[in-house]
Length: 114
Length: 113
Image (cartoon, rainbow over all chains, first blue to last red; front, top):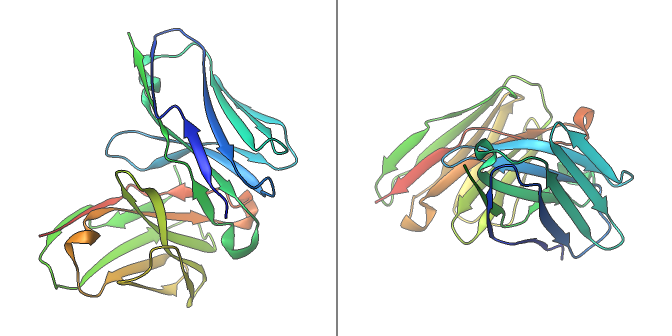
C-alpha cells in the first residue's frame, strides 16, 4: 500500500531564506507526482506536476525534484516571501488507470516571517 | 484557475437529514472526484467518476452516494447525515490531456448538528 509522508509537519523561516520541503513515498512505481499549495479556508492549488520519467520541474521560484528509486521528492522555494505562507501538500499517482487517483501526504505548514 | 465551482459553499444541517453537494466544471474533464478533508486525516477520496454514469468508490465511501448524469456535474449525497460527516468537502477534476493533473474546487464546509 502506497504511503506518502511529509516532514516536517510545520516550518517557520525568516523572509528571504531558501527552503526545501520533503516528500517521501513507499512504492517507487508511480505515474507522476503533484505538489499543491493550500491557503487557510481555501481549496488546493496545483503548483507542479512531475512525470515519473522526469527529474525536476520549475515554475518561477519553485523547483520540484523527483528521485523515484529512493522514493523522494523535494520542493525548493527560493527567496521565500510572507505570501508563500501556506500548507504544501504532495501527492503521488500510482498509475494512469482509474483516472490516476492520488495518494496525499499530510502536508507541511510553512510560515514565512517578515 | 480551472473552472470548477461547488455549491453550496457552506451548509449547516441536522443529523438524519439528506444532503446533496454539487460540483460543476467547465473544463470538459473526464474524471471527477470527491474528497473530504479533516484535521489529522488529511485528504481522503470518497468517490470518483470516470465518465457519465460511471462511478466508483474511494477509501471512505460508506454513507455517501454519487451521481453523474452530465460531464460537467458530479453530485455527492449524504443519505442520512451524521456528525462524523462534518467536514470540508472538495471536488476535483482531471483528464489524460493534462497527464491527470488534478484541479480542485473551492470546497464546501458542511456542519452536521
